[in-house]
Each structure stands twice: as C-alpha cells, then as structure tokens.
Length: 215
Image (tube, rainbow, N blue to C red):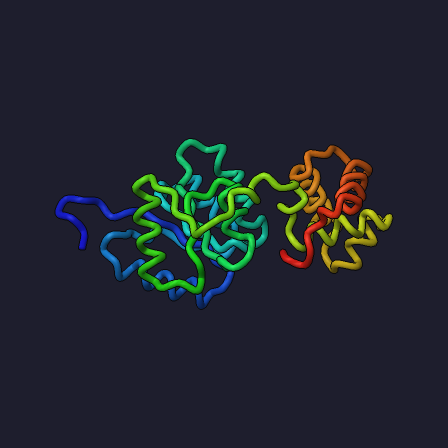
C-alpha cells in the first residue's frame, strides 16, 4: 500500500521483447506505488524520453538494442537528472557484475518473482544499491572481460587481419555498425587504434587471460 500523501515513483521500462514489456507494464500499472511514465523497445528510445521527461527509476533489459544497457548507463551517468537504473537480465552470467561496473543502481534477475522486481525498484528509488552476490575480486580483472561476445569476436577477427568491409560481410552488419563496435572496444580496452587493440589481444592470449565462451 502507498502511504497517505506519498507520491508514486515515476518509472520507465525498456525491453526488446514485446511480451516481456507488456507483462512488466501490467505489473507496474497495477501497483499504486508506481507511476509508469513510458516504455521503449530500444536504448535510443529510452534515452530520448528520459532526457525530456522526469523519471526516477528506469528498468532496462541488459541486452537492449542497439546501444546495449552498459553504453546506455554510461551515457546517462553524464546527466545530473538521469533516472537510477535497474538492469533486468540473466543473473547466472556476468551481467550483474558488468551492470554494477557500468554504474547501474540495481539488478533484478529475469528468473525472479515479480514482487522481487518491485522491491528492488522501491529500494533503488530510496537510494539503495541492490545486487545479487558478486565476487568483487572479479571487478579488478582485465578489461578484456568487459567485452561482449560480439566485441570479442570482432577483436579476434581484427587480430586475423580482417578489414572493416570483411568484418561487415562476415557478421552481416553494416560497416558503420562495425565502426561503432570498434569504438566501444577501443574505449573498453583504453587503446587508441586498431594496432593497439590487436597488440592487446595477443598480450591477453599469451598471458592466458582471454575469456572463454561467455558473452
């Protein structure tokens, strides 16, 4: 129940799956503690709305297209009135740790109960950080572990000498999208160009620090 005189928490939802978005919208619309401001299927749509409309808490899918949740969180960190963000994703992988590193305020597992998501949003709105258990020792690991599966595939292809055009054809994405991914890779690895990224890859390979399999 909402306390008399208290104002509902303004929230926005973003998920690429229309069924998930519809189900989540219904959950929040039924709860008087919340006021659903808007929904979006993309990170860009979410960003466009929260820059114009006050939102206290945003719930975003970790794999939100096109920017992705990590990049969206990074962009919003630069804005003083940005909403506090709860990432909604798979708790079994690296997503909770990566979400915390990116600057999210909370993480809610997709496998969890609806009430757990609601409570997480209430706590985040109150200024708390809410995450499942995270081994903080992994927070200090090599930046190459922060790359997504696609970014690691692109980096590996770079190391094999593939051009942007060849990468575009192999991955069936535009050359502009290849350039976008390369920019993200350079930023995450703190390198300035293709040659430095390739050198970083081979250094990680030699040290045995390349991540295996997970995205």
